[in-house]
Length: 286
Image 1: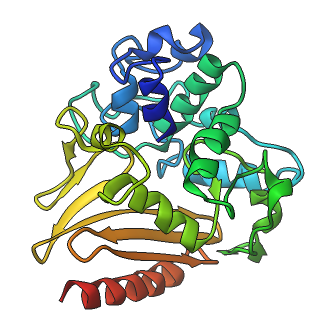
Image 2 (image 1 turned 180 degrees about the vertical axis):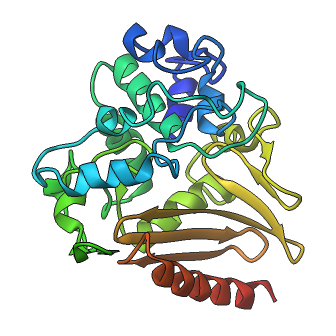
Image 3 (image 1 turned 90 degrees about the vertical axis):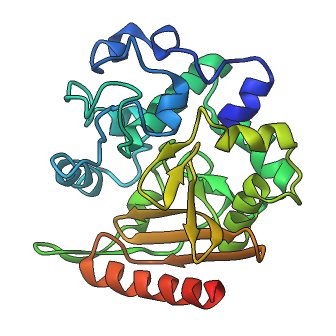
């Protein structure tokens, strides 16, 4: 949303190539960086390697959970696990979810704004939408507390990951929030009854942004759009060590389903949380 709002201000264009927006040192370590656009980073068609790829995720989580919990970790920390890795595809050729794309957009916005983008998120998104229970992870941790999240590890057992996530602020999952605020955010993007202009909302799902995921699902700028039982369902979820989220909006009934679970990256947790969400969704789609 912040990227779209800044485009409206003329600060950038979604079709700008990132080789004009990022430092040469970073660009040199990203395959096809001379062809990738901001839009492709936002809709996962850039082909950039995901730092949470199955080949690097263990190293990343070990680095987080074995580090000093008080150390503030920003986008560059996570980006290091994606640099000098092979691209999944050439830009615009395929949809492949990559959290790295959002890290790169975060760094681009920092450079354009000449300050960390968390300031603009507060001033342009959180405050105008009335998301008073939300704050940017790590950087704004003094503005609120987060619940404990529990992660099961075969070696160290069950770990409370809250002390680590209190100091993490990555652009691919920046918000610390509650269910009411998160539901409000999604509704403002996709519903007609919104405080955002129609022009801003249209940018998320215009033809140039939409990419097919499967026969029933498309992806715009940060949001899945799916046809289920003849209803239009917008959604996105999150999964971290100790945390699982789901955020859903059904267009025809104007229904929000938003849920948090304080477990994550655990087979039992994922199975049970998925079952809860699916049951709620099935009831609304009848």
